[in-house]
Length: 220
Image 1: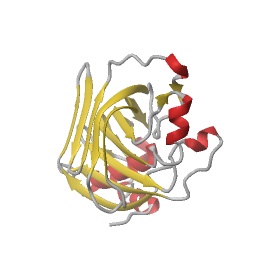
Image 2 (image 1 turned 30 degrees about the vertical axis):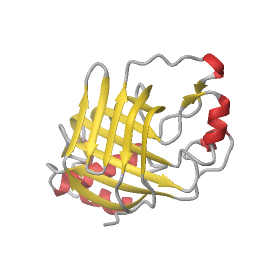
Image 3 (image 1 turned 90 degrees about the vertical axis):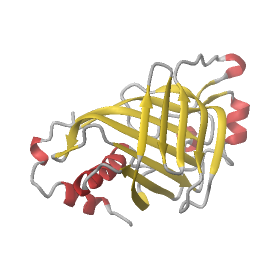
């Protein structure tokens, strides 16, 4: 099912509670199919052939969006474009299109589902823009002192959070996160997988410095 941003906001704002919305906070993680911290040779070799896909996940700790309470709920967006999603930051060409499949927490009621889609769009507007499908699904989002793990049907993420990223061989951070975050840090993607339909691509990767994790806030 396709949603325009106007339609989504019309639904979640229908209760007339927008002005009193206190905002929300939570955890965020993303993994990409190109490394975000690496040396120039690897970044250059991946620039045109990799990095066109990503998985983004949010877990709301507390708060509401447009008057809809979202405490404890999660949303996952899987995106794929026609070019690397980040090389425009370095002067390259930006993707001409990016498609997204958005999965919302199966516990969400209809208003919460709409609000979760709107949240993903608002936090990552450059990549969650052409939503070709939304679905309610069981989502697990686990974070401890060493890792962040997300499972949402065909999408799975396992990111190590306590990793030293050495600048040896000219390694550096090349790209910014795809979504707005408060304190993004580079993680080690132990594994990521998408074997779903609709995006024209599936992938499985292990042991890549291709992830970000941190916290986020909206409307505060």
